[in-house]
Length: 65
Image (cartoon, rainbow, N blue to C red; front, side, top):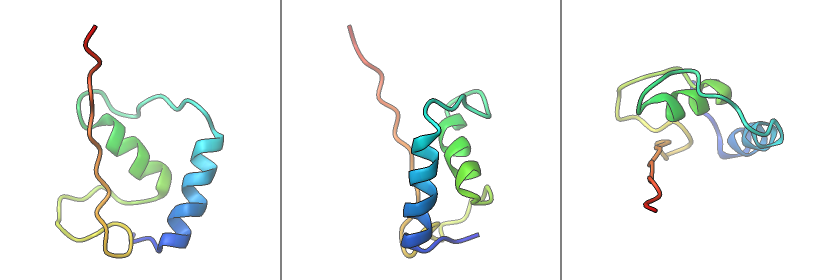
């Protein structure tokens, strides 16, 4: 399912209101998979955009102490 930017904004607002959401999958793809699942985006490995011309990506940064 591809989203319009308006659909994305509304769904993202609702997800944000949920607060902390545990990952639905272990490993490095868990965060992106969880967000796409909550947005109603089917998991895919194609290069087509998820949201009106934009591909949704996750970048993990590990804090160094």
